[in-house]
Structure formats: C-alpha cells, structure tokens
Image (cartoon, rainbow, N blue to C red; front, side, top):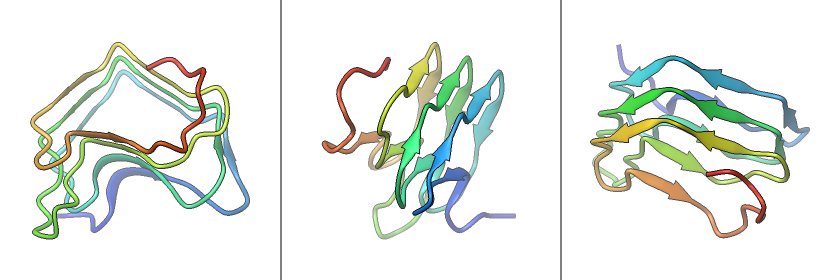
Length: 102
C-alpha cells in the first residue's frame, strides 16, 4: 500500500517537540517519500541510525528520502544510510536555522 505523503511526517501549526526516529528502515513510500518535517514549528527532533531509501515516485517531482522544511532548534540527523531517493534525495530548506547536527 502506498502512503500519499510520507513514511514519517511530523509538522503542525501548534508545534512538534522531542521526536526521535532511530534504528529503523524507511523505504518504498510514495510521493513526498521517507521522512518529512513541514507545516509549522518543529523543534528538537533526532533521526539516527536508520536506513532511508527508495522513497518517492510522484510524477510531480516530489521525490525525497529526507525532506526537512522546518526545524527551529535542536535538530539532529546522525549516522544514517540515505540513498536512492529519486529526484531530490535529501532536501533541507534554507529557513532551517543554523546550529543543528547533520
């Protein structure tokens, strides 16, 4: 079964804090792909020790393994294998604040 947005999606106008994604495999997710942060304030998330691959087959070009649209403070992407992501394997928006671990 294909998910329209992402394998893991978190984002909200009210804020998301303290998400930890670790030691997992995320693959074969449709459209936006593997992991996506969007839609508001996201703080203090960690993605670590994961295999994120072969995500996204949207003909509109929204093909990502990792799509980071928002992150205010304390965001870490550590020790992951990220590959085979289609058009945009990893996309990190310019408004993501500095001082994160990627």
